[in-house]
Length: 262
Ligand SMILES: Nc1ncnc2c1ncn2[C@@H]1O[C@H](COP(=O)(O)OP(=O)(O)O)[C@@H](O)[C@H]1O
Ligand SMILES: [Mg+2]
Image (tube, rainbow, N blue to C red; front, side):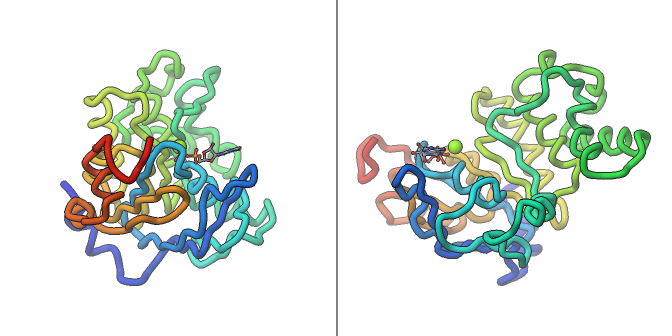
């Protein structure tokens, strides 16, 4: 599958996300220490790095859930750094987040979970909402589960409902934080098929964060490696496999010995 066909949609220099000199410090430590990169519109962009290296923190900065210590983040041409909460809400509507833990409401049915954002943010009728919910569930292979409760679903199914809940709001950017965390390999492969098919849909940009190298390489057009708050490399999976950078090599090959001390 790889990136075939998607490259054509990645118009040169057209970035939907631009990050400039991003610093994020917490408890006196620079978790992100000067990141500059851009994400091409329509691409599938991966972020890899060791646990605790700031991947989730980066996503929270992109979503405007936390404020950078310094630097700029431009989403679809709008700098989000100085925005008020109200202004941020409009930008956040462009982004759908699939959290590491599916974070569904246990007391609500699948349909009500998926409908949640639509009821909150739109004036659609209940009939229209039902149609949108059904369509979003179909796109992640979960048609017919509307009346089930999260407790009746497997981990992989809950993740897919979580994706449907984000999709229903028609985001331009889908952000996935460790989508396959806690899933077995087969369930992961199924989930990745849905992520890949969504990321090939015209116009949608996907950002996937994980320490699972092979998963990222299979899904992404471009992958950025971060380590100790810095960008080590941004390149295609093919180029990263051939990289002579010792940090990249150790990470990609999963070697216990090397410059990355655990
Ligand atoms: N709210 C917080 N308070 C203190 N430290 C934090 C907080 N959020 C993140 N960190 C620290 O920032 C670092 C990066 O965390 P995180 O972004 O979750 O890493 P990753 O997602 O790559 O595993 C970790 O060392 C973590 O301890
Ligand atoms: Mg994380």
